Structure formats: structure tokens, C-alpha cells
Image (tube, rainbow, N blue to C red; front, side, top):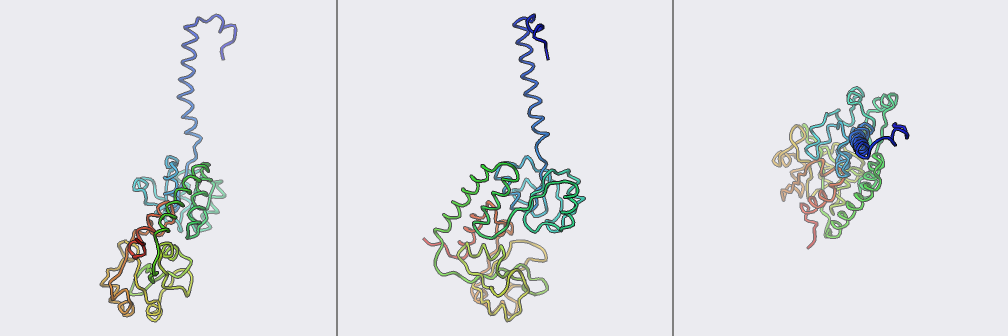
Length: 294
């Protein structure tokens, strides 16, 4: 700090130079200090990651989990593993200040280690309907200290969902969501799942309502479900199944879906994420199910 007496002895030109230098220093140091204060964030869960990007806060991300694949550029970040099998060592290696995770992330032992390391861990709520999408957006925005941006994003997504709902109607086809067909066994969705939720939003009816969650179906259960449409995630590997393989199944081959060959495949994160892209997922599925009126 320059003493007042010294300031009096300075010429106007000297004062101008000092003031300019001070402004430049503030300009240089200010952003750097803000950058240092910015939290290092890890996103766990594809929908959480999408929300962070839609909020314009992606610059805070230092890592993501395996399920976070949208938008494509997020895959350039370090991968800390699958959301339900997180390694505390992997998480701590990226020096996070804050981890924002979808409900069900873990295991609990990993969360305990993070707690001991004093790393903030925020688990966002999950429900598979329009209200759930809003709650998830608001929770992520609150964790990032941008609540107003969260309200705006939630309102936009709600309006988009309402616009889609306004054009959905007619008879609700019975839809069987098949998670996998490993070893010829049908692993399908009951109630209370993301698959069941998105089917209902798109104007369909879940063909299986005798249980919650995912279970293997007996041949009798498949025949009882009598699906008009089979819905699957569009993916490769062990969980994939070609139409011919599906309908070669002794029970699936006798369903109404087999008679018409109606199989719908949609990207899993888009279909089941229940994030900002849910209106697009509902639209795509509704069009495939034929429930869009007009």
C-alpha cells in the first residue's frame, strides 16, 4: 500500500500507471482465484451428467462414471467406474470436492470412505415420472449452487413434456420391456422401473404388472403378458438380441408382437435416463408405439 504522503508527490501520469497496473493485477488474479475456488465435481449417473451440461456447469467436471456417455465430449473425462460399483480409490484419485450421484450409487462402503475423506456426496432423488425429472434437475442445480438456472431448466423440460403429452392418446398398446435375453431367458421389467415409467409417459401400458423391478419371466408369464410391442435398449453385446432370436423363443414367438414383428429399440440412456432429454425419449417412443394422435 502506498502511503498518502507518497501519493501526493506522484504526478498524474504516475498515478495513472499505478491505477492501470492495479486493474490489470485484479483482472489477472481475480479469475485465477475464482478458478481455484471452483469445486472439482464428479458426476455419477448419466442423467446427472446431462443436467450439469444443460445447466452450463460442465467446466466444473473433473471425472464421470461409466454410464455418463452424453453429450459425447463427456467421454473425454476420466472414468471412475460403474455407478453401482464405485471404487473410493478411483474417486479420490481425481481429488473431488463434490460428487453428485444418482440414487442407488455405491456401494455404501465406498460412500463411507468418501465421507471419512470429507468429500461432499449428494445423492439426487429418483422417480420415473415428470415430477421426478423436475426434482432431479432442481437437486443437481442446488448442489452446484445455481438454483435459478435449475428452475429455468426444469420449467423448460416440463413444458416440453406437457406438449408431448397433449398429442398422445388412443388405445394403449401392451409393451413388454426386455432387459436381456441371456441364455434364452427373458429378463423383463415389472412396475416401478424407468422402463415402466417411460412406457406410461409414451401412452403405452406395461404388459407386466405382477411384480416390481426386473425378473426373469416363465414361458407362462410371457404368454400371459401378451405384448403388442417388445421394447429393448439399442445396444450390442451379451444383452442384445436380433428379432429372429427373440421370436425363436417358444413363448415370445406366440405373442401378438411376434405376429406383427413389432420390436422397438432405443438408446438406453435416452430411453431410461429421466433427465433433460426425456421429452425427446417420450416423443420417439410414442411415435414408435403409434400413440401420437393427429
